[in-house]
Image (cartoon, rainbow, N blue to C red; front, side):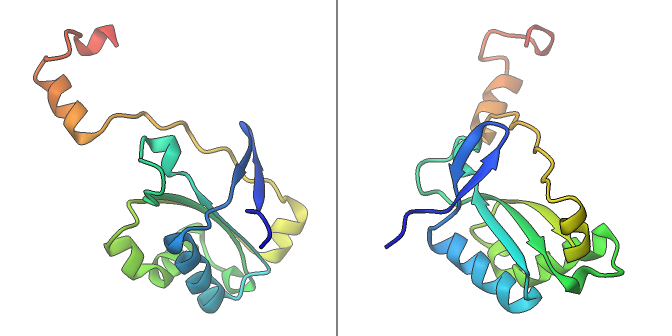
Length: 138
């Protein structure tokens, strides 16, 4: 079996998602949008998730289905295809949605901002002042 596909990013190479949720995302986007290019990146580890969490993903979808649609309309198509995943295990989804012509003219994916970190539990503790730092000190 071949190794995981790799995608370039500003921080080097990282494995594309190959867990069950990543496979479901890939299958559903393939069926709904017939993309000419599709990347599914599991970014859960960037957000403090345990190994195999599959909670945070980024997708790059290039499809002629996006022709004539605004970015919002394109995102809505992706969300519609992944409705069940977004209602359940998928916590966050970054989307780059381009037409084949746009991808041909500019095959770059803009970098995503870094995760600000912190779980809900950490935020509650910070808000209660249990960490010894005031918001201005951070």
